[in-house]
Length: 180
Image (cartoon, rainbow, N blue to C red; front, side, top):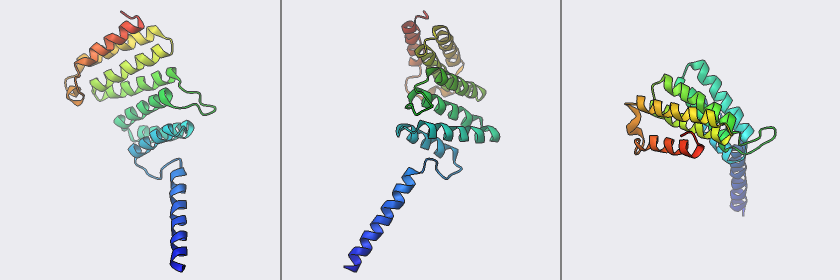
């Protein structure tokens, strides 16, 4: 009987510990990649404001450290938040204009690192976001820039399957939007 009560108390204590850890909005870590992963979890849980705050913290740390790769990745996560996040007052989502701005900033940082394929993919995504926001001219400009960045690449193409398909996909989007 005593052992049974002890087991119940232990289980309840363990359960409370797990619940309190799961409810913590921001992980206690200095690992920026882990924080960005947690931001995605917050987004999928509908906690867009917490995700926005966490992404902002990672951006500040990354910019201060001069970590161009992490700055680029952080802006891409911002883009995903604005594209995929759920509305949480006062943040109204999706916000395709903000997503486009964020993806554009990510692309600029990948260009600095000469990761042209990733830059090209982000410019293509930026174009799609501009198109979704109703700005055809900016969308068309981004698609053109995406193709130019793709042509600059000589290193990155082995990182994705069928990289030669990217220009075709960009052209398909150009036709869909009415650029060509």
